[in-house]
Amino acid sequence: MFRPSFTLFAGRGPSGIVRACGKTRDTNARLAQMPDGVNRGTRTIGVDVGGTKVAAGFVDSQGEITQHTRTAMNPRGTAEEGLAAVTTAIDTLLKMAPEAHGGVQRIGICAPGPLDPETGVVLNPPNVPCWRNFPLAAEISRRYGGFVRIDNDANAAGLAEGLWGAGRGYKNVFYACIGTGIGTGILLDGRIYYGRTGAAAEGGHVIIDYKGPRCGCGKRGCIEVLASGTAIGKKARARLVEKAGCSKVMLELAGGNVEAITSEIVGRAYAAGDPLSKEILLETVELLAIWLGNIVDLLEPDVVILGGGVATMLSPFFGEIRNRLPAWCVNARCLEIPLVAARYGENAGIAGGGALCAAPMPA
Image 1 (cartoon, rainbow, N blue to C red):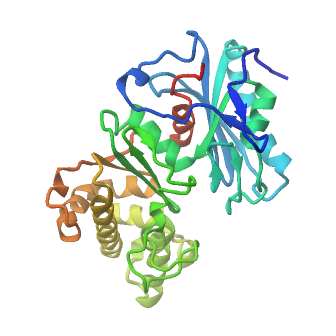
Image 2: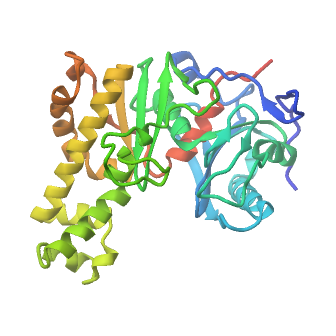
Image 3: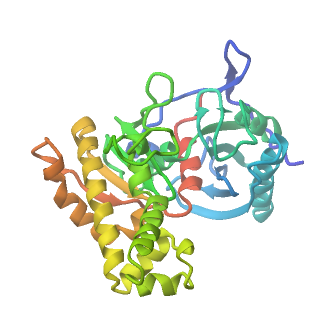
């Protein structure tokens, strides 16, 4: 078993759980230019744990992902099987770069929430039920040694964008990953904002229609249940049932099966000139403008960054979203806030894991 020889940068809190030291995560230029670890040649590994896969990659001091791999994840197996998926991904990555053995000093993990970023414990994630109060950071430290940080994917991806990506140079950043669901991260003065207990920044569950459909979180009318990829696909299927034959393009792309229509198919149909797809996407644009108007009025960030598969699909509409903000925003200077696409795509979780470790190592 590979076990590099370096100091475990962690302390123990009153509960005896391993606690990562040093919670400050800045996004200034000094940190962005840091060498990889205490000595040149050391490596940082970013790990992205999802409901069906675990991805891992080396992340350099400029936020470049130099090598990466992925392996399958069984979210409904045992806790040990879930851990084995993570270690398999890391071990596979290390085999890809034998020169890294002994030089990996930091591992950052984007894990499903809810979790405790201070203790590194995964609490009760609905998408990965194999872990309940599971000390993931401590288990990874025990196997590999070194310095381990853990956080949820939106926080970490937002940090990567602030450190190396579309948010670099801004102090206050609002990041949203719009995909199957909607996750958000907030950087205030270059640091992740956690709130009192670590549960802050659940922007995907801000309500914009209290009479709207019920979200998976239990509330009604959250932006996630109205404008996520899941919501777009559901709306398209409902419209096709209501108006049979109203979109031959979508039906063809779905092989004639209405139930197979997803947000990706809606995007492809829009690109092919389908009117119904355009109608659905413009409705999504309006919903996002309402939501972001609330975010701007509450936070007035320096920049708004949108990432994720749905955001990529909607990138031609970014100007439209921004132009609609004044109708949904009290802030008279809302148009001064840039609305930009995220730098990182499908590897945002790996970059985010690297970003979690980019702050100076504790003394």
